[in-house]
Amino acid sequence: MGEFANQPALALKADASGLRLGPFLRALRPHHWAKNTLVFLPILMAHEIFHAQLVWNALLAFISFSLLASATYLINDLVDIEADRKHPTKRFRPLAAGTLKTAHAKAAIPILVGASVALAFAMPKPIWFLAALAAYLALGQLYVFYLKRKLLVDVLALAALHVLRILAGNAATGIPLSSWLLAFAMFLFFSLALLKRYAELREAGDNVGLRGMGRGYQAGDLETLSQMGMSSALVSALIVALYVDTKSVSGLYSMPQLIWLICPIVLYVMARLWVLARRGEVADDPLVFMISDWRSQLMGALSILIVLAATFL
Image (cartoon, rainbow, N blue to C red):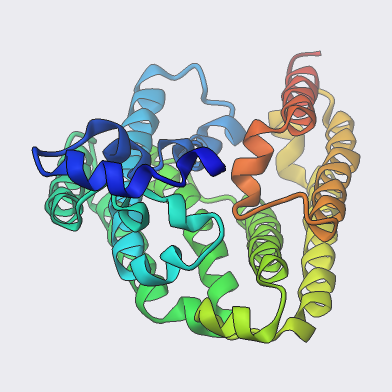
């Protein structure tokens, strides 16, 4: 990271002539937009992936949520700018490093939110999707300004933000809610949120570092977070196993017993992720790590093949 050492001073000088596109795009965190593919889960689980109108609505929901998420990232970075400047890795974020002006970030936020809301009105029934957007924005701001400093409430809020993406997919497509999908997602994302906090606190190293991050944790809480996270991951795999024996499965799959094979995949991916986190090899956001990790990608592709086989064989 030594190559970044002199960037802030150089970037500030360049910013005097206007907005720099590169730092601005990095501040939007487009690599996090992959999380918003969760809006496609309802049509995938309902086997409506070949329904053009539903896919189009889900695509609009994806773009809308991506714009709104980027707005919340900018708000978060503006609020945490001083703390980020003291962080070993977050200090390279555009706002903390000075490569993006705060004025430019503040101006972009209402534009991103407005574009997100405008896309919602392109849907056949926008009211429920707008409600999902409003809930995401409200919870996101509550998290940025208050909940992120509260013990365990912060990780519950993070998990809920991911589940809201699935609910938005339901709202955009009109597909009925699946209680099994929501239960699986809540436990899975609760585990990932705990892992995110575990990785951050492990990197901080001591109680002084934890207080500096403005979090409600102590160094001795790491083991507790790890135990809760791994337990939640196991429950998510159990939900998949229980789902296979439900009546609704027989109407969706010709060979539902093949869905059992997804259980060991979930166990492997989550167990491996926690082992790597305890080794200090997972930094910051575990979802971003999974997206770039070839083993996780392979397990995701294998899961898709299993679902296809269970459906069409």
